[in-house]
Amino acid sequence: MKKVEAIIREEKLEPVRVALEGIGVYGMTVAEVSGRGREKGIPLQWRSGEYRVEFLPKVKIEVVVLDEDLSRTLNAIVSKARTGERGDGKIFVMPVEHAIRIRTGDRDDNAV
Amino acid sequence: MSSGDTAWILMSTALVMLMTPGLALFYAGMVRKKNVLSTMMMSFAILGVIGVLWVLYGYTLSFGPDKGGIIGGLDWIGLRNVGQDPSSTYATTVPHLAFMMYQGMFAIITVALMTGAVVERIKFSSLLIFSVLWFTLIYCPVAHWVWGSGGWLAKLGALDFAGGTVVHITAGVSAMALALVLGPRKGFTEKHPMEPANIPMVALGAALLWFGWFGFNAGSALTSGGLAANAFVATNTAACTAAITWMSLGWIHRRPSLLGVATGAVVGLVAITPAAGFVNPLAAIPIGMVAAAISFYVMMWRSRQKVDESLDVWACHGMGGTWGALATGVFASVAVNSAGAAGLIYGSGILLAKQAAAVGVVWVVAFAGTWVLAKAVNAVVGLRVKQEEEVVGLDISQHGERAYGGL
Image (cartoon, rainbow over all chains, first blue to last red; front, side, top):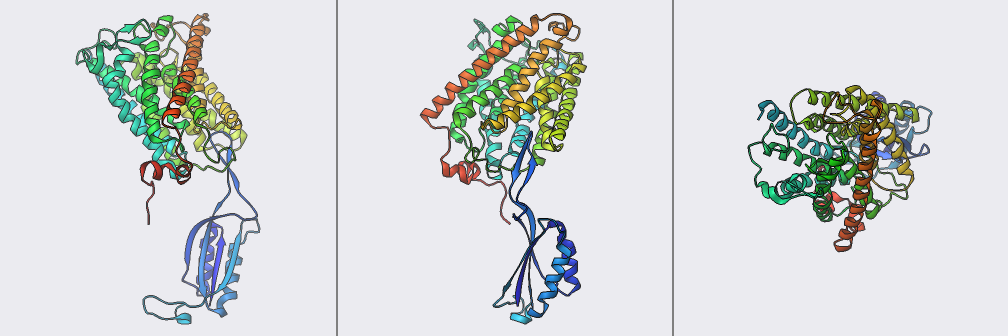
């Protein structure tokens, strides 16, 4: 099992969700987050003049998949979340030791 | 006694009252979210405190029978001799109590206006002490000089229809002095980002201020008739002109922002305040336009000076009020109000000179008086919260509350 943490543009959440559903990945946890990468902050309008915002709004998707589904999952996210501009985000993949479905008590591969 | 006038003054009193909660929203939307409640609390607490002090002694100090042009006597202390019958001196067609309460709302908002300079770092208890002293020693005398029967600036012939000098210059200039004594917010000099918590709240606050301002300016006619209508039209026209002027200036520099339109509207309202019942309504267009330009660039200049007069009370109210007072000396017309005088465009520079003199006096008194009071309060009880309290935010550290709850 692998956990995929994808930090993407807010407006890409819906295309990514549809693409993941298309390959059978339904479950996910989504959070509104703030962050910064190479695009750094942006200036916003104060009453006269500007102020800088150093962290920009992004969406973080967390999804846990079976090892054999990993590459399809990554491809789906990358292909739908990319614009080619700075600020498209990042994906991190990490191993998962255990998974448990709370309702049934199913464990690991059966719980994903 | 006129029932029409009485109805209008009671209504206007309620309108001006609503401006102080409006101001609370206007200011609170511009601070960081950890200080939203504390910023609103300042206006609400002042509404309470000054509301009581006004009936106890503020009204008589400001409007009581004149003592040497400097201060009102104590004849009306605790509303003694202020009853249901009209005063023989002020607003003689409405109950004296109605006039008294109407004026009280001006005193309240003037004190509340200053709080914009000191948000996010002033100790709440010290703010209350300062507010009581400032109200007693600066607001009441200046209100008497300009509006009190026998007040020396009134006798000089300086005009202030609804409070450009009494309200906006005193609050704006005092705000700057208070901010200078208090010092900048932690992180201000290092240019840490300070993002406004809620701009829709600022817009709602500006809308309530605009709405209440019809009571402020048109109510200052003290009668329900043609002069009130003149002031009403001038007020709205100035707000509209200044809003779109500010929007355009923002656009030239980058983008037209809602924060800018809201600020512009307020600045236009400030500037027309002293003039509304003395000038032709169309004079509101140049008055609003110039007001927005002055405040816009003064605000930009102020932020480059590393002076943390946080919400620009000085740039908006001090400068807007100053321009409005001087513009009254330019545009005033006796055809609009026979109790006024002819301004520069009607061939006489005398009124403009008187306006400039009143502006100068009030600037000096407000700045010096506030500086001394602020230093004194700072020396005795300290004006600032502790550094840890500032970091955690005043909502928690001063009031034990948070604006936005859990799940």
